[in-house]
Image 1 (cartoon, rainbow, N blue to C red):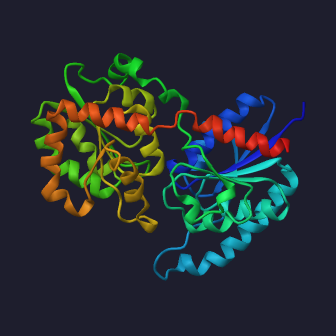
Image 2: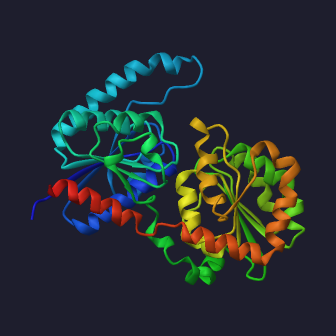
Length: 364
């Protein structure tokens, strides 16, 4: 049997890295002898997270364009040329059978170079509104795996495959792990648990909200597990002194914390939305308004419009948070409805379906 080689590129945030790792793991399951290489941005979190998952990674000198004129923007052309040159070198020496991009700065130059060598490329677009990189790459990509309807506005229709977003396979059966999750995180089994997710780097406005509303939340006999992100730990870890509050930068066992949680307040990055549908926890989304094309709001609305979650705009938190939160925790029928409807939108086989698409390409 041929010894296949794959390059995966995705990074900048957990939302691009974990789907790439999930795809790599599934490729390994199909082709145990396959060689797999990751390519990321050299100063981003993928440089730690990918080796921790057991894969080699090469870094490119690349960063995104800022929205205002900065020194970084003036450096962009040089970084792009450097990244294209290094991508060319990597592809020539590694000789991959296919290249898969899951978003993030590094996937642009890498897939561009793979296309120029006529190597099959797959784009995995996580969001309901694609970024400029994937729109440009889609013209030459062989296959585009998407998680939302109506993306033919942005991509060639004949290349689109509706797969859903890859999720960690250990999330497929969290209901059976509740007792294990409560014990692992040292939670009080007699209390309901609110899980707060600000994404891998953290979300300033979400942290400010929880700080302001902490007494209100705790007064409802609820314990709080608060992932504040590594950028904000120094500021908020003082709240670990409060009873029924745990503040962490990062969560190493997402399956167990989902299992132990009853309610979730979360940003609406594509991976988080997909995971929360799969685990079916009643959720209030607070989308970040600071991302390109406001895609977090679009991601969340795809679920909210099907009555699978609740949403509060960041600009309306002060007037709406307490009433919305109270409605969620006091209404069991609402909790059941949100849970059932979100699970209907989940795509548990997304990773398998994406890898099936990759296999079709390399076999043809």
